[in-house]
Every structure is written in C-alpha cells, then in structure tokens.
Image (cartoon, rainbow, N blue to C red; front, side):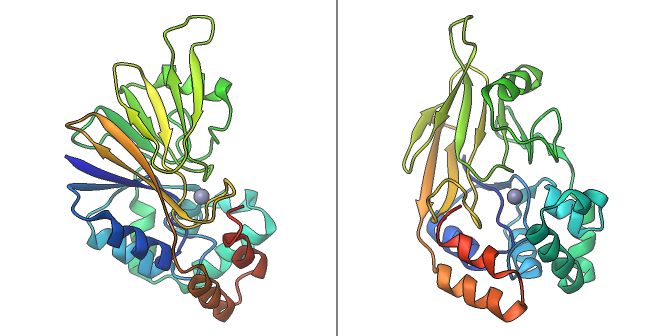
Length: 245
Ligand code: ZN
C-alpha cells in the first residue's frame, strides 16, 4: 500500500494542489492536522482533503477555527489570521473541523497519527530529543506520525541504552527503512515550511517495502501570496512563505 502523509497545509490550496498532482496513485492519504489557519483558502483546502478521502486528525488551528479556546495562545499574526478564518469558513467546513479526532490509528500500518505528540495530541511541539524520547516510549503503536513544528524530522530508537533516541533531520529524497525500532516521524509542512526551504514538504510510505520517503516540491508561492494580499491577512505571513521560515 502506498500512503501519502501530509501535514500543516494551512489553507494553502496552491501548495496542496501541487502536492496532490505530484503524488500519482496512492491508496491512502493521512493528514496530521492544521488544514487551516494562516493562509487564504481554508474552505477549499478542507473540501479538497475530504474529496481525497483523507484520514485527518485535529491540529491546534483546526481546533481554533471550529471555535476552540486555543486561539488565546496564538501569536498576534496567527490570531489575526484565525479571526479572519473563523469569519470566512462556511458552516460545513466548521462542522467538519469540529468533529476531527485528536488521534487515529489508520489501517495499513502499526502507526498513530496525531498533530502535536502522542502524549499531548494537539499542543506539544516535538522539537527536542527529550520530549521525543518520552513520547516514543508512550506510543502504543510501533510508529508515530506528527506535524505541528513544520520541520521534517525523525526521532528513532537506537540500539544503545546510553542514548536511546536519536533525531534525524531528513532532507529531500531522504529514504528511511522502517524496522522494529519505534519512531516518530514528521513529514514537514505542505503550506508553510519552517526549515529554511520554502518548497512544500511531504512524505510517502510504501508499507510493502517498509520504506518512508520525504519529498520537497516547488509550487507557485506568488499565487498564494497574491491570494493572501486580496484577503487582508497579515503581510508578514505572506512574505515568510518565500523564505520557508
Ligand atoms: Zn501548523
């Protein structure tokens, strides 16, 4: 089975369409949350993912868009974008986001899909080896998939007891053989990468070959920026897209 793993699309329809077009034939689409927030086309992104039968978990921005109090902890630009998102999404989109589960164990692989971390599915940022170690041991499946930091990375168990977890920063075309070691992987962000590479980031998994591959894809950033300029979303949010930060 060939699975595409996407995360943090953030209302960037242009980036999402580019990724979907590049994917070719897949058997499943798993999305680690944050369909909306920051970008210009929230309802269209949600509709596209639903049409693609995506298995989706709830991110902090999805939660806030559906009316959750999590908006209170947002940075000023994220807050402004969220107020705008709440205003423009249609009722069907809002209801869909409100129903998203916090965690899913999808069919086809021994894996848990969450946005933040297995221990704190909506909020925790898995950006340190210490936090990853706790979460890898708490995982009830062999593998975990997360988003939220917008940085592609893997935290994998080692065979050494002195240093039980190691982070692997994964570049484009990085291939990882899945074995009996537990791990948590982040596909990076489709719609707002933050690792210094502006291109859309995502992952595919071939469950028969037990292999995960990371991908980067150039998309029309200017088109997303133009769409943002029309909405009055904070211009800083548009500019950061071309820097991948
Ligand atoms: Zn996000």
